[in-house]
Length: 240
Ligand code: F6R
Image 1 (tube, rainbow, N blue to C red):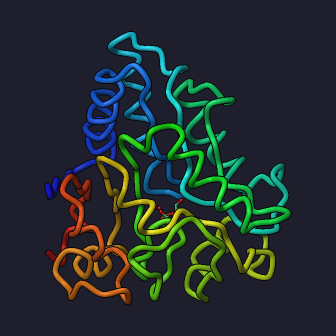
Image 2 (spheres, rainbow, N blue to C red):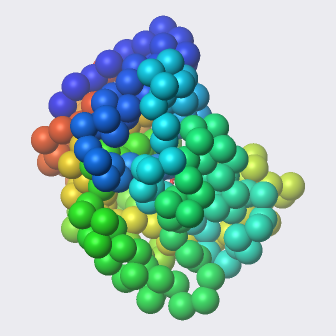
């Protein structure tokens, strides 16, 4: 495991972007796992900047997002389909037809099974980008999620609903369920990068790195993976 601490989000994004571009350059058929939320935004900007500097097109990269709300129409501006299109696909110049986001509509259990199969059919994820929730969640794997869990529907915890209310007009509009890659699915990615910024994430980062390895701290499962790089700002690293 590597821990890197940066003084600016621009530097953090550039460094993570360089790691992602190196993976993409190393393979004819690269597969990258995307995350939503505030944390990966500098990474997507850094990835786009490094790709542009090196003159490398990104339209052949296959991508799988981590998660999506259940029951929220795909066209909703805060659906993760919309967020990934806006924050990642357009910024980086990915091919929209190669960017998959789990489907939280219809038969979600069947969609979840099919999603894991699609990742396997693509030969697995070469590098997965992760944020971490204040409660330590990865994707939407809330505390209590089994370390070997697969893509599935999950009930969101009150603190996650409260954290995500900033994206909606009111907290009552935040979906209460989501479909997420499981912790077992995430651990199968060959390389992981975890991005955490801001003081509010410091306890979750410290618990993931130094607390007991426990399903109550989903981030602690990352210690079971042999190739994880943490990208932190000074505030998120302040309790290490
Ligand atoms: C991302 C996701 C979540 C977020 C986490 C942090 O797809 O499902 O695990 O990474 O909640 O969110 P931000 O970055 O907004 O603080």
